Image 1 (tube, rainbow, N blue to C red):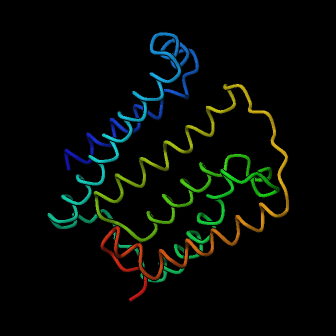
Image 2: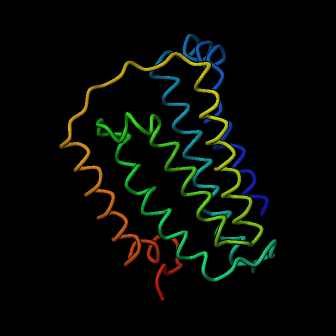
Image 3: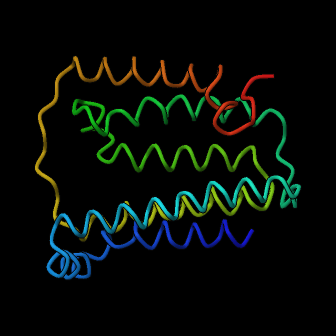
Length: 188
């Protein structure tokens, strides 16, 4: 469990820097824009690797149950994950969906984390998903203090692409990728 916690601390330390604009600016001034991006990326990747490894170790040790979610929550989770998969590509393809949601990546992370908290009651999962949920909520609130990005005009074609890409990715995860990547089947 310690490796998971260390990974979460490192990963979110890197991701909390942008929520402190003065601190981020000081780092960019000191390291340069590319230096900052490089250090940020390396730190985040190290944290992510430790999260994945630590979560795997914690799951292998056996679950310490915090709560026992009801079986029917799986259906709620599957619906929420469809929404998360549709919203996620909107981060990269501007359109009405992105304009309506405003911060689609954060909405996708919040939806992913909440939906997984509904079906995973073991300590490692609660720690992992609650931390991601808390960070995404904090990051969204902190965006009010940061300069707003200029609105980008999108097209209806992008919205259609977002929905199609989201549904295809969702289907791939439900059928194969979740089992292959995470080791847990979604169906079955």
